[in-house]
Amino acid sequence: MEMPEGPSVKKFSLLASPFVGQMVMEVGGSSKQINLKNLKELWFHDCQVHGKNLFLAFGFDEREIVMSRPHETEQEGRSLEKVMDTGRDGIVLPQIKSQESKGPDADNLLQDADCTGPAVPEEPWRWLHFHFGLFGSVRANEFARAQRANKKGDWKDPSPRLVLHFDGGGFLAFYNCRMAWCSGPNTKPTYDILSVHFHRGQALEALCKPRLVCAILLDQRYFSGLGNIIKNEILYSSRIHPLSQGVLLPRKSAESLVDHALRFSSDWLHNKLQGQGLHYQVYMKEACPLGHQVLKESLGPRTGWKRLTWWCPDCQVLYT
Image (cartoon, rainbow, N blue to C red; front, side, top):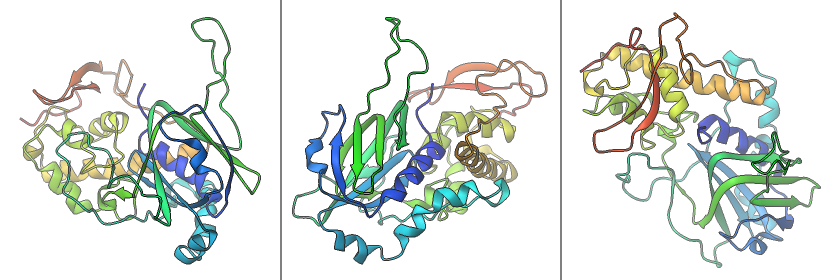
């Protein structure tokens, strides 16, 4: 299993966006990471997704929502309906607003979206940062149900970490996630593979680094939201071996890799919102579409984190 990647978290944000502008009336859940009671009677101010991270802002006064977002809350509330009604080639990806980065990029290879620090009570609103585990999800106006019996043979429904009931009558349920208060997202939307601000030139520049291409793609500083599933699939589609050196990639191959990253992510989001699965070419497969044997191994930097990788030695070229 893989933790939710960019398309999944984008779907979570589209489910939460219609509740922007409403007050939290009741709070429940099993999380001990924050004091859940602090959310009661706060106004849901904003919703942003950055890569694999979801940020929800809660304010103390309804007027702050109107002043800061006079027309965008209604627009975001219709985002899910827009995407559902739009064909794959014309998929609508709502604009992601973000604050400018307030510090240097972290050195961690798999750096996720960061926060600038804990919020103080005197601020007009504060942000709740969500990072999801292997089975993490967000549900709107419904609870998750058990799909199989547990080890004890019991059909026990998953327990939500957080449940927010709003004054409009609906609710949001958050599962298998970590959460913490922060003063806001510290991210660069130009590196988010599902953002309209994604910068193609910066992505190509990152791919020219003297590092393994499989590691570059998972570096959230350059390809925010791109995870292991996307990595496997786009490397195969671009016919690039995961252990290729980025600096040795032909320009045409690097451009193909970026194109496939954007297309695969967009198609994945579209299928998720349509309730459809996505057909993988090599991920968890024994053979590629051409019938060649697919190899599976944990690959990565010699001294870094290695990730389980599927690739076809016949179709994918090793640049080294």
